[in-house]
Length: 233
Ligand SMILES: [Zn+2]
Image (cartoon, rainbow, N blue to C red; front, top):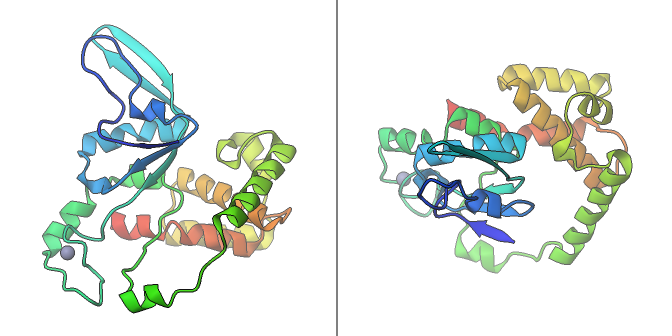
């Protein structure tokens, strides 16, 4: 089930904490369209559940913890007018407006988003001539297979791997270790970012049916974090 968000984390005022949209999205998808349009304080609330799968809400003297293990999917424009980098239309935003818009997403929040992709605007002719990709049914089967393989191997999703289990099931060979060390330095990855790259690389390998994480799986996972770097700068 997809939950789109009007108010995140705290659904009702009053003294009794109640689960908000974040908890309603437990085991589902939390979708945020136009992510920078949410107040920064609201977006920062996401940091805790993105890390722990739980949210703590304090209301007056009461505190409550709710489950909140969701998949975050979010969309944003490249700038307030939406045309930056579009070959068909001119962006009229000033550099200050663009950086103010992007700064609404904090570094620590972006650090918790594993896959960040830029989707350039396409001319209509390209859309009309587009060939059909693989069907959703095809992808659903591949994802189901990858999830099943994670379950057989470690009894949990890759996203939940921590500590010793992460080291054990996301072990790299020497080429992989070198590649990730170089990427960590070049992209200034945090420890959290480093571990998240490993989990994504593990999932890419699983989708391919590969038992070990190969350098190309890692390289793909690293590439998905580049936007966080460019936005954070
Ligand atoms: Zn613009």
